[in-house]
Length: 147
Image 1 (cartoon, rainbow, N blue to C red):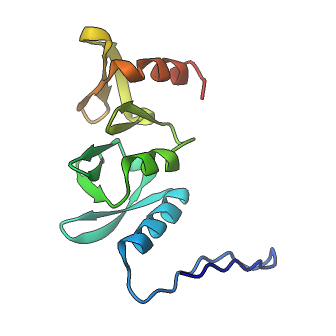
Image 2 (image 1 turned 90 degrees about the vertical axis):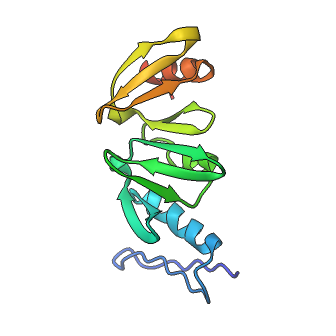
Image 3 (image 1 turned 135 degrees about the vertical axis):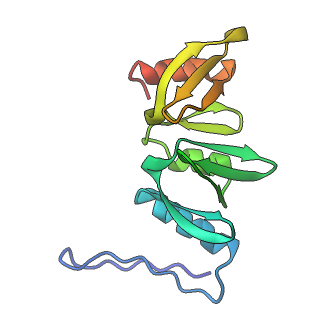
């Protein structure tokens, strides 16, 4: 695949165009990355592609080599790895709280201690998410205003 970058004058709109023979998983991954930078994620539900605004995502979870994003009511599959999604969500108030789970801190209603050094986050939609003890220090730093 050839990559070209062309500068345009400031008064012209910026356009990203992908020209391909077929929309492969690699092309879909590129599209997902670009859209996430614009505040949307490309996902799939019932065989249909949908655009999910990042602000609607409560959390993302990796299950059986697939990644699912959860909104207040629905679940969608996204075709990237959990670590790639984590990297894309840096600076957007998302934090890894389990090995396979990234949480949108803006969707947390409350956090309380649980057993064995873990915490439980109550989300605004009523769901509860367990925060593994390994990730509690990162949570505390983030909540205190750190990275």
